[in-house]
Image (cartoon, rainbow, N blue to C red; front, side, top):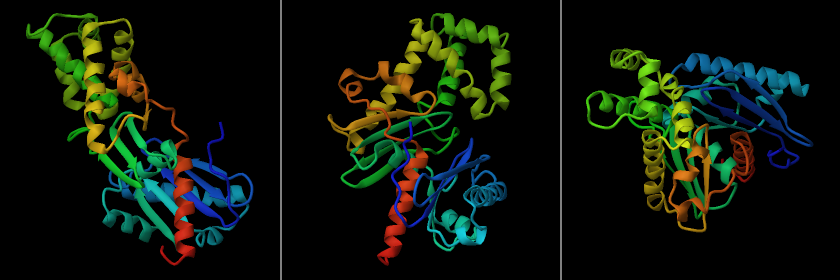
Length: 298
């Protein structure tokens, strides 16, 4: 499905940079030119992120048959992982040759891509997680603070929770289940679980989540409890973000859509497929930025 917005005559550059990959699009007349480079997180590795962004602009220029110097004058919107405040946004902008660029964290593009201009909430649950609301023209974001301080309902949270409950079984605090047996076998014993957890990265915990979702589909009690807890953490936030019945709820990310059966029925009834991908949101935001520049408000 081509979910990229229709194009206007004045070109824009849109960048969606995440921890897995970075996509760049140049729009003008006709179909957008899209290229892809490696991961971008300006907090975890600023220099590497700038290098990938520079490579992406050069690749985009080559693909479009344009000079890099020409692209430097095109209004640019960048939604990037790791932009935690305006100071980081200014630092990124200063490191790039673009004369007119707006830099924000990547959640804005994801929200705009999923919901377009409509009211609703997006719960994004991949290795990490965040929840975003778009109500009455205003956006609000909750979470995205990383594995140590947050990321409830993320894949890494699910993996860690599975190990925590397995250790409860070892301590005799709960009955064993197929999931606890699976984890104890995978890590040999409780000592193996502790050794793994001591050095595991978020992605390592997240790699355990498929076993949980599979066993939950087989009605394993422990796995079902974990997914129900995760879904409830999403449901509890919705009213605080302004969501009301009738608004869209988009579940995105690798594990997010799998929470649908575990949400309360009155909420699950409003689950909607995302309208588009984060890159389409970045293009729409780039076009808005260009319009603001043309109106002297950029």
